[in-house]
Length: 220
Image (cartoon, rainbow, N blue to C red; front, side, top):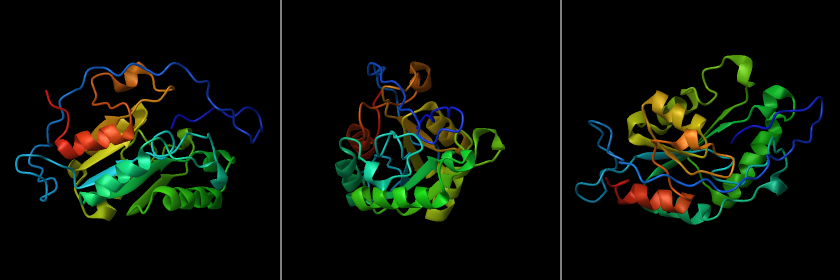
């Protein structure tokens, strides 16, 4: 999710302008982290993550900036099927999400919990939720692109960060993964800047990303 910039004291955010879908660059290599066992049940010679950590807004569900209304939650195309396939393969699932609307005074923590609950109803269950409620200028360790959310989610799942893949739609998701020692995959949306996914593994949608991960990643 790329947060919208609040204007004055308005509590109704403006949806970012839509642009042409970015052209996804050529597929990049996706080797296993050094020394990582991945998922033991995977086919011989194929590394799979033990856990996949997903951004919420713009990745799992359509991005409605500072959304506090569960009725506005709409899954991204293919998300439900992608998650079913990950669960069927024994991969642990978690959500790592910046929700600065709380720190900005545009949302309450309870509204975030209710929206998360709706996401869980439509796409869950998820083994862990890790949410940063802080403003960008708060200097916290958890707000992506810092690694705190990824590290906490991995710890709660009982896996190493190197055994995780983070799926997100903007550079901050990938940077948080990389800072934590995890792998990152970007699924660009119309608001994703080309520089954010240059030289990183990408996929046109969540289902394609999932299937490539389960098949062993991005071939050279």
